[in-house]
Amino acid sequence: MRKITFDEEELLAIAVLDPDTRQNTIRQLEDILPELQDDPDMEVIVSSAAEKLKLISEEAFAELDLESYRNEFLEDDEEGAAE
Image 1 (cartoon, one colour):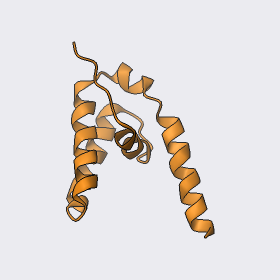
Image 2 (spheres, helix red, strand yellow):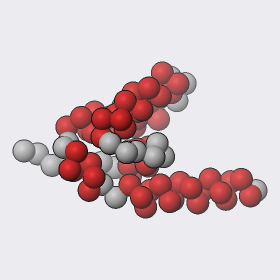
Image 3 (cartoon, helix red, strand yellow):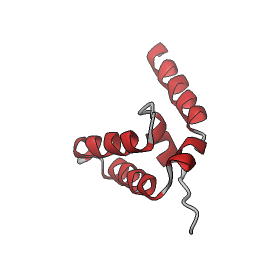
């Protein structure tokens, strides 16, 4: 079986959703796709992340290092709010 790898943008897109399970995260990503029609680059990232999540197991999902990406997002968000 081929190893599925996520790029940093896909991992960040997943992490900002505060994912709990692979299935719920896929559903959340698919739910936001219609809102991204005006941002084709982000639409590709989110769609790709959802498709890759469909190909991995729940165990592989649990091993993704999403916390560091979530922390990065939260830090960037706090910095933006401070400006």
